[in-house]
Amino acid sequence: MIMSCPLNGDINAMASKFIDENVKDLNDALQGAKYIIAEWISDNATYRKYIRNNMYKFGILETKIKKNANDENKTYEMYYDYNEAVSRIKPHRVLAINRAEKENVISVKINIDNTKILEFLETKNVKNNDSFCACYIKEAIEDGYKRLIFPSVEREIRSDLTQKAEEVAIDNFSKNLEALLLTPPIKEKVILAFDPGFVNGCKLAVIDKTGKYLDSTVIKPFLNNISLEKVNNCKLKVAALIKKYNVDIIAIGNGTASRESEKFCADMIKEFNLPCKYVIVSEAGASIYSASKVAIEEFPDLAVEKRSAVSIGRRLQDPLSELVKVPPEGIGVGLYQHDVQGKKLSESLDFVVSKAVNSVGVNINTASSSLLKYVSGIKKNNIDKIISYREKHGKINSRDEIKKKRLLTDKVFEQAIGFLRITEGTNILDTTGIHPESYNVALKLLDELGFGLKDVGTDNLIQRLNEVNIEDYVSKLNTDIYTLEDVVSSLKKPNRDPRDEMPQPILKSDVLNIDDLKLGMKLQGTVRNVVDFGAFIDIGLHNDGLVHISKISKDYIKHPSDVLSVGDIVDCYVEEIFKDKEKVSLSLISDK
Image 1 (cartoon, rainbow, N blue to C red):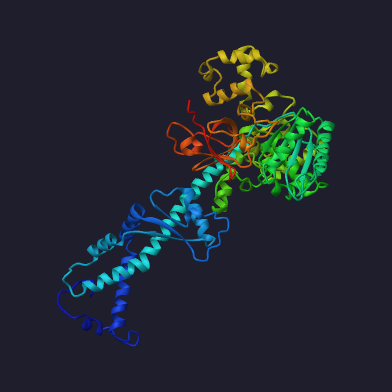
Image 2 (tube, rainbow, N blue to C red; image 1 turned 90 degrees about the vertical axis):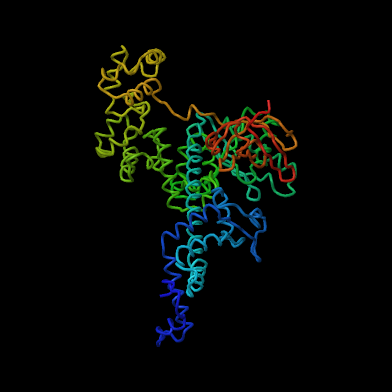
């Protein structure tokens, strides 16, 4: 009756008809009617869509510090009094604001000019402004908007912003993880793994060229008030290990006391004139691995901290094989990865790990169960069969043996075998990424060119394949261009590893001090993390330097990952020096 906007009549007369045991008086009747109108308006999908679009376009997200907020390190200081347009807010800021709100540091709300929205709702619902009912409809509209629609739409928009921010964070983390997994291995080197620490000391472990554990010790050179004599004794102890095992490289974890350990090693190398270098290695997730079931099975007699050191060393020798032993979300190369939905993150990261493992390939004779589980198609029962067979019969000599011994079912064999490598076996094609189904294509091509299996990977064959027009052989060999391209690539480099084409980690023998820096100085660094607003680059200081997105390229880039990946070796220039905070801003753009 109210919504019909009658011109004549009396609201009390209308309301009196509805008074009964549940509706006590005229006010109750009128209030109830307005509640019903408010709900009708709130439930209207067209109105909600208009309001949501309006809030997206013109809304301002505001944050204020709470009265009793506890933020000792001023982590969220930027958001104590902050506002930004909903339409422009960056994904990493959404996640930072969400975390600060969750920790009760700030309050968050979306502000919008309500006048325009209320006018829109009134235009749609008040048929006649001269009606004695118009004022009641307007009151119901305002109540419905403020009490029902606005809070609901505000939640929807913040949920949308969070979902988009999580997608960006997961995508960013996935790209960084893939780059880290594909860090080139440093092969055929004896490593001294150096897991830094202050009070509990530095855990050291020596591993041979194959990653086999040889020896370990603990030193405590960073204790308070430690004498110079004790520090020198620590250096003697480490130098003795290096000489005993002919250590080539010291792998220093990048955690607590990393830079102090770097200086310790640099000084020791100089003092004893040792023929080795050192390199900083990401130790993210090493502690998770060291206490895991996999680590206990590998090193049942080693203490947790020594397993952690071994893991750091092996990460230098073969990052992929070692990092797959750590849950992907435990490898900290993202931004706010602990604030996103665990299931979505895990699914995305598992896919990235599988992609990396399959692109590199897996040596079936040396691969751990942690590595085999990421090979396409392979399940736990297949892994158990493979490892049991290896333990009982020793080395697997061919892909054909895998099939004959039923280590994989026909279906799994078809799906997985192209990613499983057998080195020094009976068939050189088993070392390649060529699927057995395409062996006949490879053999026919070799025959057409006047070569045999013994020539695979030789300079003569490579030269001949470089001269060949592949398209001429597609119909001749009854295959497709993609298969043939893969075959040719594998025949040129049977043990091809995509990681070999990436820049090797920077090996150093001396440290860099912040006092050594000058504005504009050119340095070489390693990209440790790529985030929405820039990238963190290890130039050898206590803290990684930050290069802002605006200083990455002269050309416009949408995201730092368009240009940079974790593990990239880059030339950079000192932009700003903050000695009090021991921080440096960098630029990748040369002024020259």
